[in-house]
Amino acid sequence: MAEPRNIIQKIWDQHVVAELDDGQCLLHVDRIVLHDRAGPAVFEPLQASGRKPAQPGLVFGTMDHIVDTHVGRDDNTLFKGGRAFIESFRAGALTHGVTLFDMGDPRQGISHVISPELGIALPGATLVCCDSHTSTVGGLGALAWGIGTTEGEHALATQTLVRSRPRTMRVEMNGRLPPGVTAKDMALALIGRHGATGGDGHAIEFCGEAVRGLGVEARLTLCNMAVEFGAWTGLVAPDATTVDWLRGRPHAPRGDQWDAAIAHWRSLCSDPGASYDRTLELDCATLAPQVTWGTHPGQVVGVLDPVVPDAEGAQRALDYMDVRAGQVLAGLPIDAAFIGSCTNSRLSDLRTAAAVVQGRRVAAGVTAIVVPGSTAVKLAAEAEGLDTVFRDAGFEWRESGCSLCFYVGGDSFDRPGRPARRVISSTNRNFEGRQGPGVRTHLASPATVAASALAGCIADPRPLLAA
Image (cartoon, rainbow, N blue to C red; front, top):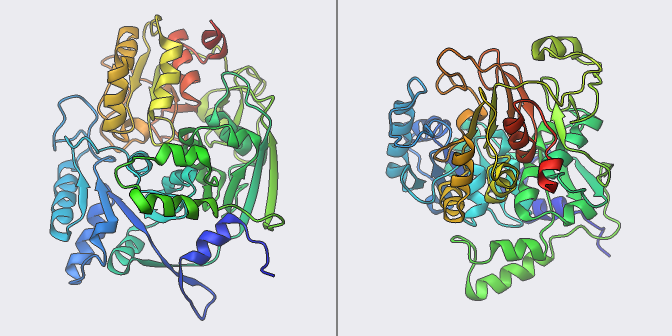
């Protein structure tokens, strides 16, 4: 009788092309996603060596990192030298026959938003991208991970990559989420409890009642944050919720292939008795909205709880963020609020934030920005009138892209005569300078970001959602 296997082991074994002498495996890569920041560094050496993509039909490119998100954008970006990145990437995609979702294409958007949205990422598939947050698409049950540009060149030329088998971890998230608490809060609470290195290079299966109760887009958020936990990747086993969400997506199987795909996806679950290298549990029934106080995602507390510094780098983080031990973050004044990024910019995120904002106004002096994760999300939100809700409240409503998730010397939160130094953000990283030189970033859910924009200070969204 075969030994029980977990879902990670199953997907891995289905993609092994060869077992190598050093114990590593040559894996088949089902999908490759490229973007404008790393794409040129993949295409240029590939072309210089005289190689071509092995299967260009399995490679997809999008404009997301370098492009501006201001309305009326073009190839001229606020990022110095950005035009050269964009033009090089566009030319490389054309030369190599790679599908490119360019500016103006209704399929354009952030890599990890459009991959699931278009059905490029699928349960049980392997997917790589030159971006650390590629694990996001594990929310569909894909085995996905970020790679460097050299690996990207190899993947394009061979449709394979060499990897060592990962250690596996089961993270069981139990209980029903309280109102106003989201997948972002679940992820931050997990990292806060076990540290930013708690995942320690593992491939994580997220499971349990709280995970099963999440929609697919929330599961994508959870898996997005796996790398902030120090994991190699994370995933959620596909179920009926996954199937319903994928049905009819442009690159999803159709007809008889759809039926065959569902049958395969149903087999992608961990066997009873399957072992893991490590198991963790998190009780989600009592969670509150989370807000980071420091300079990594593990330095986090409930919005109404006092700051409790951890041991590692705590004083530097306190000094940089200008907060003190024992301080409650609620009520701390902010300069800007940002809703966007591959973590929290999907339609469900915007709906939740809009429910908080509806009929209210952004506080005086606060710069508030919404950047949809894809053009499709933007159009869908506009069809529902969400853009009007945000604009009427005083938010900027922008085109899709990575935008102010990270600072590359271009766009900033600053306004003439008013530098933005404290920002609450729905993004995934809060390192020193991540959103600009000297900017202090507090990570939170879209609901908490929206509530804070209205209050002019870090605020609990629950009273506004209950109103």
